[in-house]
Image 1: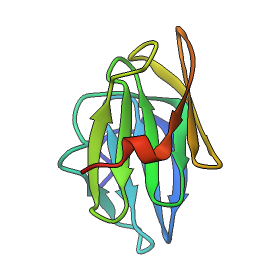
Image 2 (image 1 turned 120 degrees about the vertical axis):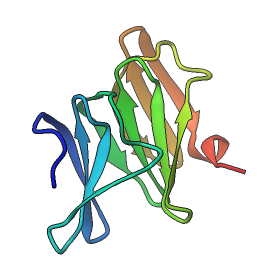
Image 3 (image 1 turned 90 degrees about the horizontal axis):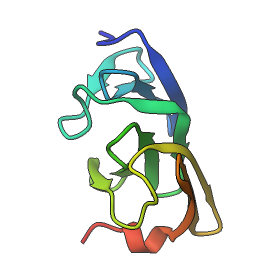
Image 4 (image 1 turned 45 degrees about the horizontal axis):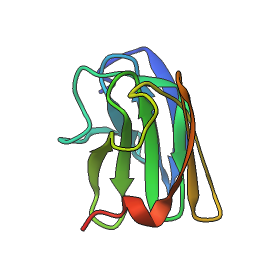
Length: 119
């Protein structure tokens, strides 16, 4: 079931929904109504309000104090990005034309989505 009731962000990903929480990381609500956790994106961390976006190959989530979380749809794995961010408090995320725009409490940065690809 839902591990934490404080929901901060929701984005559709194919037929499922990715749900960011305040205190329990990121969960998936399947099209069948089942809640699933991610081993690499569940725990006691916070996704900032509305700081989540689904792009073609990835899902991006802005966290409070942990930088940017990146979900690779092909592998089904999350990874963290902290390098190149003005702050680890990511408060806004938008994707457009191959670039990710990341807002923090210390400014905005534009990052090429290709540069975030996991090896």
